[in-house]
Length: 115
Image (cartoon, rainbow, N blue to C red):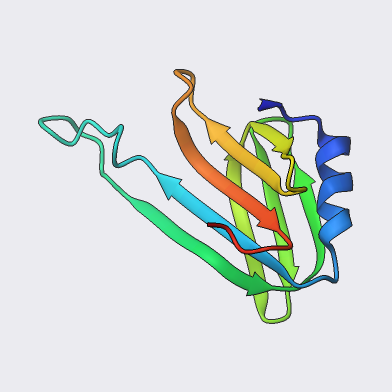
C-alpha cells in the first residue's frame, strides 16, 4: 500500500459509482488497546460483503482522510484513512494505519465478493 493520493483515490471511488459493489468495512483498536491496566477503551466494527450501490463517493480532509459513500438510505463512512491500493483484482483497498503501522480502519470496495 502507498500513502493516499486524493485524486487517485477519488478516481477509483468514481469508477465504482452506480454499480453493485461489495463493501468490507472494519475498525479496530481492540488488538492494540491497552485495556489490560491501561485507560484505553476497546471498540471495533466489522461488515463484510455488504452489497450496495452508491450514488457518489468522496474523499475529504488533509490526512488522515475521510471517505464517504452515499447509498440510497444513508452513508457508508470511514475516517482515518492513510493508505490505498488497487489490487490485481481491481478492488480498491483503503486503510488507516497508526504511527506504528497497525491497522485502525479498513474500507474495501469490489465488484466481486471478498473471500
